[in-house]
Amino acid sequence: MSGDMSNNPDAAPSLIQSETQNLDPKKSVIKNEKIMEACWSRVNQRMRKDIGDAAWRHWIKPLRVSRLEDGTLTLEADSTLARERVRSQYADRLRVISSAEFIDMAPSIRHIEVRLAVSRHQMHVNQPHRLSDQRLPAQEEASTSAKDNDLMLGLDPRYTFSNFVVGKPNELAFAVARRTAESEKVAFNPLFLYGGVGLGKTHLMHAIAWHIRQQSPSRKVLYLSAEKFMYRFVRALRFRDTMSFKEQFRSVDVLMIDDVQFISGKDSTQEEFFHTFNALVEDGRQVIISADKSPTDLEGMEERLRSRLGWGMVADIHPADYELRLGILQAKAEQAPVQIADKVLEFMAHRIVSNVRELEGALNRILAHAMLVGREITIESAAELLADLLRASSRQVSVDAIQKRVASHYDVRVSEMFSARRARNIARPRQVAMYLAKNLTSLSYPDIGRQFGGRDHTTVMHAVKTIESLSKSDNQLAEDVQLLKSILAG
Ligand code: ADP
Ligand code: MG
Image 1 (cartoon, rainbow, N blue to C red):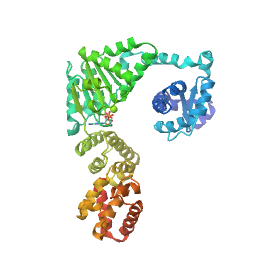
Image 2: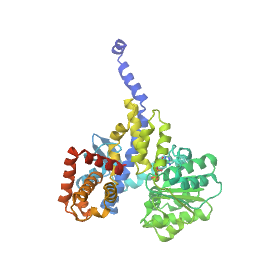
Image 3: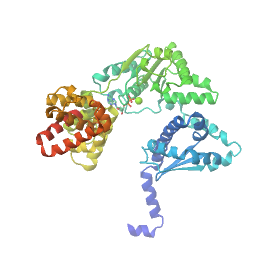
Image 4: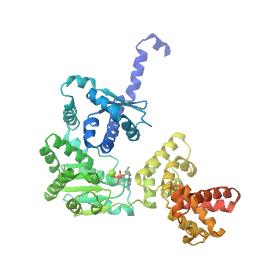
């Protein structure tokens, strides 16, 4: 075999080629480009907030992201002027922001490289400032040529009703979403779903879209984020093309706008949205909206829009309780190729309380580990693997909760936590509470002191040291502290 290869000069290259073909480099390049564009668009949003609209539009927006390699992010500018300006004035800020926003692709960005976009520059050498304007419509045309596909673009195939686990906190939202998806006629108009991040709003909206798509393919469903809505609207304004923009939105049977809070404070987008919304509702088309708050609590929204949004059915999704968290973990674990013990899932459901997205992330980590290592996951190894998440969620313990729990454990009054009394039977529990506050929250010594009746930070430091050193010799105390810790953090 190796003899063959050395005799045939073509053998080695073709071998390499077929290997790369197996990896389908085209697909992964396209995927990477997409992720890169998404990261870059987040950088843009933050830059825009940071440096103001005018400067952003002039210097940052026309840039194109071209490459990310070895911690260097390469951008292309349309003119030498733009290149120099970005290098001298914005590179530092871009580096810091990109480091955070490109986290999906690289652990950090150490350097921003700005180059001249050679070919484009030569082609349009006389009108460098209009380059970016001209480029957009062509790009857009290419990506949306198949109109129908465009409508379903960005819908996650996993986000279906059958993959949605129902429990008390989300049963109302689930029921109305299902009902809306199943009825041929307009059910509730608008349907307004709201709840905190990572609780399943987007999942339910996609599920509605998939369902309608399957059940009545002739109905035209358009799903998009409020951000996209704004982007398209602004672009339409820029190209004086608002007619076709309006046409596009007003011709659908079902319009879904996700995360509508995004257009808070953006007056002209809100105005346009309001008109689109009214036109559709009056015409008997279904409108479905999601937001992180209820219509009445949406700040920065015009009053008439807020009240209009609350006219139909408003359903909120509450944070998942223990049963739902466990149910979701079990459902997802069932589909996995490796088995995770029930007690590990229970442990996770107890400890990861923030939202479903984080819960999923935790499970994925556990599954990946189980598959790689091929050893059974125990509570201990899970705790180790998820240490950062567990710490983050235990940080949510309040000093108030610590004081109450410690007081009841030692059978002293909660008010003693703030009192000046120094009797041992009171001072010791108080010190334990301070120690736990330091360990279970991210508060500083002075912060903690303030919450214990305005004590000095040195008192808190002393308390922490005392409990640490006493725990080494006093088993009873060590046990108490350990128990309180696990109760409070769990
Ligand atoms: P939101 O839009 O409210 O921020 P998402 O819909 O994006 O939240 O949900 C975050 C993640 O959690 C998604 O991967 C989603 O599939 C999952 N998820 C949320 N709720 C449930 C549920 N009840 N059953 C199954 N998966 C869920
Ligand atoms: Mg969402």
